[in-house]
Image (cartoon, rainbow, N blue to C red):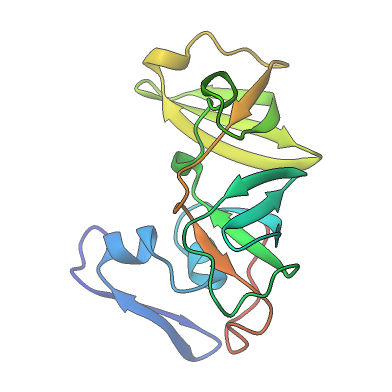
Length: 165
């Protein structure tokens, strides 16, 4: 991807997205693109209010829920590993709780393999402030109110089914 100025992602013979490698990674058009380019956490969620969602039993605020997504509807929130941050509860922000199952030290960053309510989740964080984290520890996770991609049933019927992370 680093050699191309524009890439085209095709699934089942249908163009899913055209854009710069950075835009395709940061703003995938659907779940297929999100799982095809890079890693993604595919998290089951439910809309519970105009700007609220429930994720693993925790109510969180989201500024950009689609108007076509009715209250009560289930959807998938795709979050990149770097969009998950190990903080939140201490700042009074809503946070998910995740148990650390594995830590990969990559020098300047840490890859955290987590278990969040029985679901595997990956987070990538800057190493320096988080080197104290240990396997077995429970940590709060949060993310920006506009992070990730929302996909609900029927939105991308022509897209190939995404693969689990």
